[in-house]
Amino acid sequence: MGSHAIPPTPELRALMDDVRRLVQALRLTASAAERQLGISGAQLFVLQRLGEHPGASVGELAVHTATHQSSVSVVAKRLIARGLVARGHADGDRRRAVLTLTPRGRTLLARAPASPGAALQAALAQLTPTVRRGLSRGLGALLAELGASHLAPALFFEEESRRPTPSRNKKKVHP
Image (cartoon, rainbow, N blue to C red; front, side):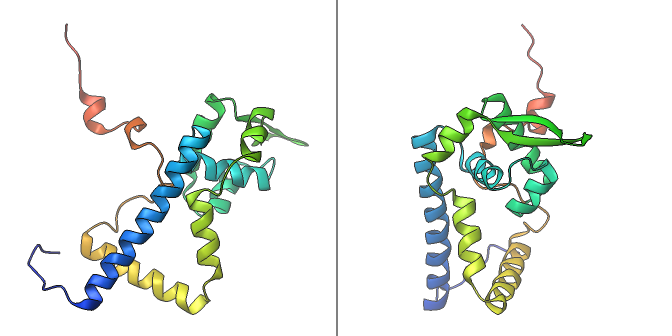
């Protein structure tokens, strides 16, 4: 990866424009949901998947959102804290924790637009397997060039400012 200047070609310009459009479309969808509902796009995505799969575990929601269990766990905790989701136990297996929508969560979900994650997942599912594989290989190569292959894939547009960072954890305030 380098910062050497590459003369922009029409193909490079088209790729840059496509990436910009993708990010813009996802951001606009997330912003609209946040303004309308007061929750992040990631929270809406998890809420929608939970509405489709009542009584799902965090692990099951991770499968349904195509993301890592730890990302879903963080979002689920925020939804529980807001009173939109309740944590309980599965019928017949008290060891298995499950999540359900609260009445408040169902009411919010009834007036919700599509989340950025749901819209993207649905659009990707409409592509042929060959196109999806090519897109995956291409994005993987792009991430490698950017040095970003190692990043943990979090849900789209979850509030970054609320995540603890190493520098925040190390700060000590002295009066």
